[in-house]
Image (cartoon, rainbow, N blue to C red; front, side):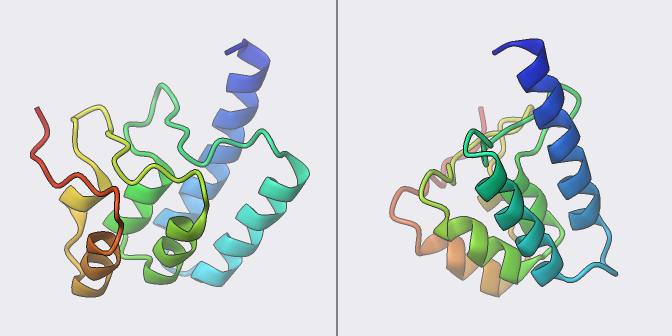
Amino acid sequence: MDNIFGSKMNKIYGKISNKINNKAILDSEIILEMETVRKKDPGFDINWKPNNQNWPLLTRAVFYEREELVKYLLMVPDIDVNNRGLSGATAFHFAGNINILKLLLNCRDLDVTNPE
């Protein structure tokens, strides 16, 4: 991956990530922004993990209990529900909300093993 692509992805990820962290921003706003990014840039990697962050967007959405956003992300065809952060944990390991946990448990490819 070249530096231009990585730099662009870091910028996009950072913007979306900051919105996920901010409870004042509605899930629908974040979903709309992600849809816009995905349409404008078909190369956008929904599973991206920048070097200075250890969580992909799905894990971040689960951690911050963004239920509608989690639903949206799980519908993205190339989402990796087993994408591990730097600690080895997946979104499943951060699911403290029962509704989000149920959404994840309904994923056919979910791996519930402990991180190494």
